[in-house]
Amino acid sequence: MNRVADTAVIDAPPFDPALVACGHDAMDVWLIGWRCDQCGHLALGERRVCGLCGGRDGQRRRLGAEGELDTWTTVVRRERTYVVGYCYLGDGEDDRRVRVFGPVLVDTEDQLRRHARIRIDFVTSTLRGKKCVHHAIVPLTASEE
Image 1: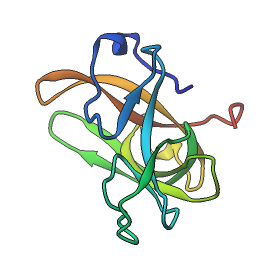
Image 2: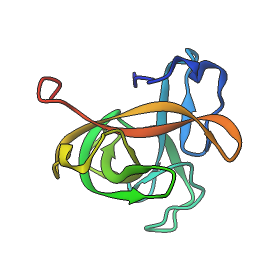
Image 3: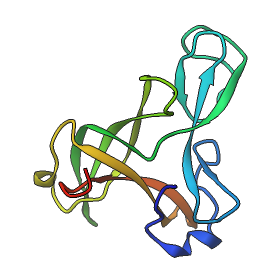
């Protein structure tokens, strides 16, 4: 089960229901993947057509909560500075992975290294004027790896 960083998640809907799903327990939240029945391609989010082979049949998948950090950058804005990045996640069926973009929960880029193990947490934020749940990338500490 993925960790939820803010218990207020219980009362907030997913920011994008094509990417985030919730189980029967409101604290059980995960990223949605889709695997093509024809070629086995794994994609992030709900799909109707495979982007690789054009196949129209596939299965909704639960992406894993842990993966690997690929790359990141710091965004500097007048209001605040934050880090965003890409990580790779799989569904546990084979070694195929999807690239996932999201905020990285660190103070500075100095805390990151390429290929570091990460986990996906879910946080609540006010986005586009409404409170909702979305994913965030959290680097694992040495003791968690």
